[in-house]
Amino acid sequence: MGDYELSNLLILGAGGHGKVVADAAMATGSWSGIAFLDSNKDLKEVLGFPVVGDIESYTFFLERFPAAFVAIGHNKTRLLWLEKLKQAGFQIPTIIHPASTISRFSSIGSGSIVMAGVVVNAATTIGEGCILNTSSSIDHDCIIERGVHLSPGVNVSGTVSIKSYTWLGVGAKVSNNVTIGSNVTVAAGAVVINNVSDHVMVAGVPAKIKKDFGDER
Ligand SMILES: CC(C)(COP(=O)(O)OP(=O)(O)OC[C@H]1O[C@@H](n2cnc3c(N)ncnc32)[C@H](O)[C@@H]1OP(=O)(O)O)[C@@H](O)C(=O)NCCC(=O)NCCS
Image (cartoon, rainbow, N blue to C red; front, side, top):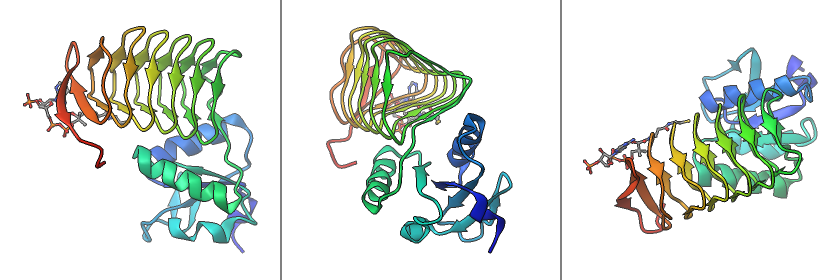
């Protein structure tokens, strides 16, 4: 049996996001090692940690790795796998990089990751399976629903609501008291100053609707 038996966090997805998740997980000091699952059969090792199997074989690893985490960027896909892991009986941690600043008066759901440099302010609630990427910030009294991804450098002001599966591109900014709907894409660098409806892509300063996806995504 290989060294990976000493690992105790199983990460689904060994791509770029998986690397940063693994790095943050190890920085917490909560795990002695990592094992990845990935659909790329040629991938044997990432950051010195073993890729032990295909993502579809997750149930096989439950006994050896009681805690598991999904490192897949696409929001709906990530939440789909999160549900599968929960149903199989895995523990789903919340990973918080020690170089982030999280208010004691906030809450962050399981399966969510907080990268280095993030600030979450008081009375904010973050749902499960969210990605708060490098140096993003979320101010007071926000409600961020499940499966939301804030890309690096996103700034969300106070009393903002962001519905499920929405993705904010790198450097986007959201003004205070705004609601952004479900399944929305906010383009890189956009400044959102008005409410945004569900299933659209907005871009620009100020952000305007560029595409309407319907609800097929
Ligand atoms: C929004 C995004 C996903 C592109 O979506 P898309 O559906 O492929 O959009 P298109 O490229 O077809 O562009 C549609 C329109 O939006 C505009 N647009 C796209 N991205 C834009 C941006 N960031 N700022 C301003 N306008 C933008 C295009 O110019 C185009 O405008 P037009 O119709 O007037 O010509 C992409 O531009 C983006 O911003 N990605 C974010 C990447 C990122 O943050 N990565 C971090 C990962 S951690």
